[in-house]
Length: 49
Image (tube, rainbow, N blue to C red; front, side, top):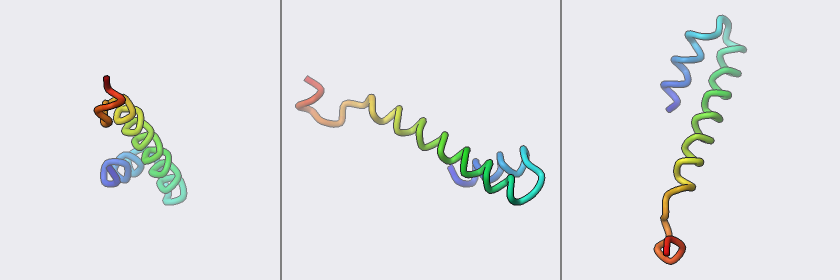
């Protein structure tokens, strides 16, 4: 995930301050997407019933 966000930020932004900001934004979005996906999985067998 970090390599993806670093690459994406490097392509989208021009100087290092904006690259860091864009990389952080990408990481937050990626983590939120993963949390949303995992929150829908029935990890507890008692809860899944």
